[in-house]
Length: 127
Length: 236
Image 1 (cartoon, helix red, strand yellow):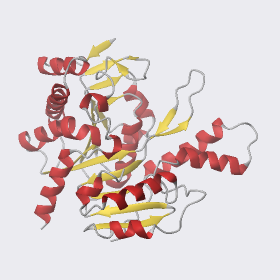
Image 2 (cartoon, rainbow over the protein chains, first blue to last red):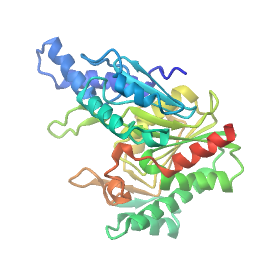
Image 3 (tube, chains in turn red, orange):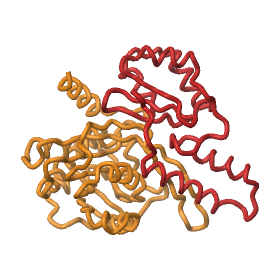
Image 4 (cartoon, each protein chain N blue to C red):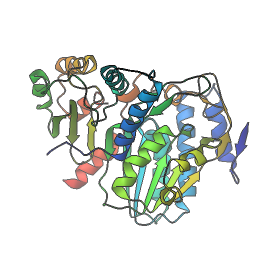
């Protein structure tokens, strides 16, 4: 099972709107690095696998994969800094905090503590 | 001011009143949404749905509004041999900050989904939403599904809409898609309160009134759990 999915039109609209919106809200002259940092900030919790975070981990923490591997039928991969996942033929998603961000670290900490054993245990944590 | 749609029956009027009434308990509020869902299902069910139908909603609308629509369509019509149910969880991001008189412009990508399998194309797509105001979530749900499923007909069902929301949503899509839209609603309001909620609308924040505000995006509807479990049994 490969949980990676192509961006939908909704992802592409989100990305284009975030880029244009950040541009419209920027002062007349802005350093590219500042512009990109502002885009990343606005996209920070979006889980749109189109904008790669400026800084993100290249692999998921081992302590998280050990927990996720114990959940039967749950598959995941790291795509452009975001964790994409799939369960069975009905459930899928992209965790909205990029890997390595404080929000993602909180997610890791919670799962290590909770030790979910089934998808039902894990599901409420995935959005 | 509130303008009721034509031929709104007394049951719908009563349910709309219960949504607006701040004294309504969580249970009464939930039940009112279920009843409105059944009534919207009845209206949608009178249309030609075809053989393949997909019903899409957000997590907060699944257990009551969407369940009502689903119950009516699956139990009391014979037009749909199979209804694929989908529930989306949307993140909410501010793409353009509020400035002067202009409100902020949000985007709402889908970050999590429960979606029952359906073919590469479907006859009808039904989007169920408790209220349509900025249309942000509805726009993203439509964008997510239309490209993948190419629905011939698109039904957008909400008990209450903000005046002008239909035209604004149509303007966001190419004409050949916008002309497939058919809206079903019972009341049209034209005001918003200080918090930005449509007034009287559905009586404030739907998350708070349904009693799921604390769970936020972590809320998993019972309908999703039931359908998934039934679906897994059928597949085995």
